[in-house]
Image 1 (tube, protein in one colour):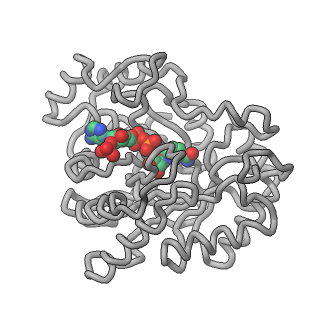
Image 2 (cartoon, protein in one colour; image 1 turned 135 degrees about the horizontal axis):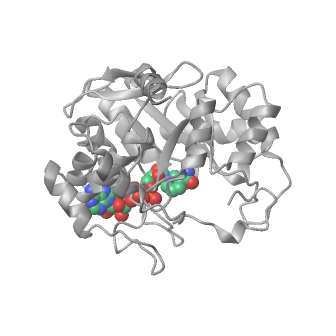
Length: 330
Ligand SMILES: NC(=O)c1ccc[n+]([C@@H]2O[C@H](COP(=O)([O-])OP(=O)(O)OC[C@H]3O[C@@H](n4cnc5c(N)ncnc54)[C@H](OP(=O)(O)O)[C@@H]3O)[C@@H](O)[C@H]2O)c1
C-alpha cells in the first residue's frame, strides 16, 4: 500500500519550471493540466474600511515572487487585488522574465455571483481586472450564495457548478474547482455532475490538517491547495484560544536549526510533504524569497509525527455569521 502510494505520488509529479530556487514541481490535475505545487497568496485580510488601496504592495510581492521562481499566484475577486496581480504579471511578461503559459493564476467566484447567469459576467470582470485572457484555475470561493448586503439567496452550488463548466468550455478558465466545500458537498458534486473539480482549496495548517478530507481528495484525484498555511503560528495573528505551537516553540526551533531553516519554512515543508499545495501570503520581499526556499531538505518521520500532533481540528477561518445558510460547510 505504502509503495503503491509512493509511486502514485512520484508519477503525478513532474518538474517543469526552472527557477532561481530550483525547479518547482507540478501536480497533474484530473483534467490533464499541471499545477505548480507551491504558490503566493494575495489576500490582505479583512479590510472593512476603504483601503487606501492602489498602493502597490501586492504588485511588488508578485513581481518579487516571479523573480524568486514562483509560478503560481492565488487571488480572488473579493480580495480586491486582481488588478495588482495582473499588473505584476503583465510587467514580468513584457520584461521577458516569463511567458503567460509559464504561470498558473487562480481566481475565485464570490458568493454574490452564484447562479446560472452570474458566473460569466463575474469571470469577465475578474479577467478585465487581471488584464488576462484566461485564468488557469477558477474556484467557487464558498458554497454559499449571498447578496452583497449579506442576505442569502437560494441557489444550489450544483447550478453554479454547471456555469463553471461552461467557463471551462469557453476557455476562459483552463481548470475549475471549489473552495471551502466539505466532503459531503464534494461527494454530492461528483455524483451529480459530469465534470469533477480539479482542485479543492481549504484551510490547512498545523492546527487544522484535515486528514480525512485530504485522503478523500487523493482517492478522487483532486489536488488540495492549503490556504492560511501558517494558521496561528504568529502571535499577532493567533486568537487567544488558538492551540500551540507559535513560531517560538522550542521543538520547532530545534528542527528549523537542524536544517538551517526558519520555523515558518518547517511549517510549509510539512504541508508539501503531505502533498498539499501551500499558498502563503506575504508582502515582504525577504519572506517571499524565504517561503519558497523549502525544496532542498526533507523532514524525518519523527519530525513529521511531532508536527502531526499539533492537529487539533482548529479553524482560523470560520465565518459563523453564515451558519444559517443551508450550504454552510463547517
Ligand atoms: N479560499 C479561501 O477561502 C481562502 C481563505 C483565506 C486565504 N486564502 C488564500 O490563502 C492565502 C494565504 O492565507 P492567509 O493570507 O490567510 O495567511 P498565511 O499565508 O498563513 O499568513 C499570512 C501572514 O503571515 C505573514 N508571513 C508570511 N510569511 C512569513 C514568514 N516567513 N515569517 C513571518 N511571517 C510571515 C504575513 O506577513 P507579511 O505579509 O506582512 O509579510 C501575513 O501576516 C491568502 O492570501 C489567500 O490567497 C484563501
